[in-house]
Length: 609
Image (cartoon, rainbow, N blue to C red):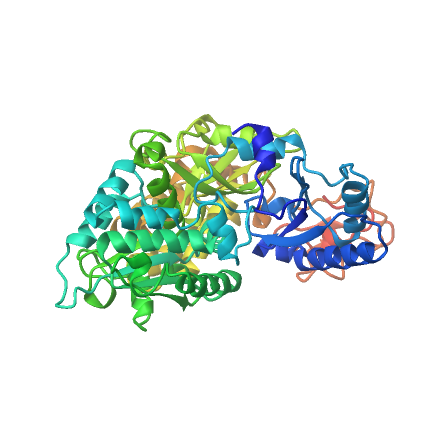
């Protein structure tokens, strides 16, 4: 799509009406979207009363997440006959100027207007699951229908038999977007063919639980366009002739839960959900299940245990859920992003979707991207895209004229890649070939200010805290790994610890019951594989070049700068500082120092390094 067309993506609006929309995603609300929205309403009412708007009619609206979370609050202005203008990082105090300059004066308020690369970035993305994010009101079924919503469901029911739908999804090459990458059509087929009870009970589910602290694409899709997820789920339900649908999500996804429930009610009223859907004779209802905020709940068998009212603990497989899932019945489970992709495949055809991505991973994938880069947030990318493409072309490159040191791919269950592997494609197999996994599809690009061991400690610490404790390798092994990393980062490490750490990680990987333990160790394994010299430097030289490992800090007093004021002595909890009074410069005994940093903070003359 050309840039001009990207600018013209618009919501349906009344003829001659100026429409102003505010992003009310979670990140938008956190940045003050409600205040911005209220200020627009207040200012427009006042300007209308004072006849400042003339014959212009302004209408307010809200939209969901488009992925540019680092630029919130985002405001779009649609003037009939003109290109859309997006404003970034809008504050309430900017509202008056936007209205006076743009709406009344006809000139863009350039101080807050998005630059050309914003539109170019939208143009380059392959937006399927996120197609309507930032374009329509997530709480309006009419706006969803106006952009082609539920046309996929109509086509699925009227033009396909259930088994033909499954073949269409298989032909598209769609793979599960929850990280595992299982071929979606094959999973549908296995569930449809699994033996059932006399009532033909089959469940169909949305996995909307994301525990990875860096991932939020499912939440954003459910918030930004809940009807798209529901439509995909209904198409899948008809394909396998499911008898009940469940959307499983986290209870702290309050906005998503609210909008999903509103969307389900609206869909029932319009005949898209419930009895005799669209006159087809097929009936199904869908409910929302709110689970507790636990990382392990995203694992399929633990998720189903949670729905059944049990403690969410993984179960050994097989049998797989497509044969024996929820309450022992055949169950089809895909994540929200996968379901949101299905309607477009049915509307546009399997060949259209298969034309994107490499042969072994057709289509595109939403990534949550962060790090020392210009643009952070969600981007939906063709799976042929490389990390280098993303960092340089989509994200504006590493900031402050620094260079790339490492790519942390896959979040807390992923691993680290060096700059030499930045040309790696973002499909499932390419990532596995270099020792990382897609996971919940997040990656961060870091400059030299990042420490591999410090990042590994965070990943291992998070997974250790989130383990269910059922299996010994994960429960005990992650603690042992964390302790080894602490030793290295605090100056107690030995060179032989690196090999011991690697062996321990391999054992946890091979013997854990579920994917959490299997993947939790990737950060350490890839860190040792690609950044072994950094581990060795921490141990032999007792230096963290990124200055992240406080246990390796060494404090020195510059005698020429010390005025012997004694300010550093009192806060030292171990009495490691001598001198510092009567014109005698202070001295720090590093054998007594515990690296608490109190002396450094107390020195007002920058005499302590």
